[in-house]
Image (cartoon, rainbow, N blue to C red):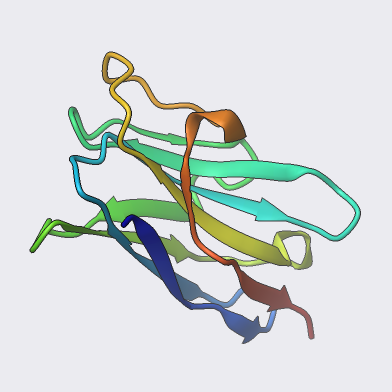
Length: 129
């Protein structure tokens, strides 16, 4: 059975840093992994995604240059996904979700929620002084 288990998050002052982690377990290969975030009352926004086939990384404009998505070593059918968040500001406050898909779509990844079928339960990130 597939699952995504998140850790990290919490509260930080503006300008601070946080790291989110996600362990993704599947019975088959994972092709795309992503981070989304959601503010109460708004839709879920794609933050970053990474392709496991070619390593390509894509960021939404608001986090480019501040956030870094990375992948750890695959071990025992488990993937490790990370999001290093630097220079955080209050607009980054949200519930962050990791996501993955084991469906092959030619090596492409997306910020579409429908692209992903394995989701973490979310972790709160709060940036305030």
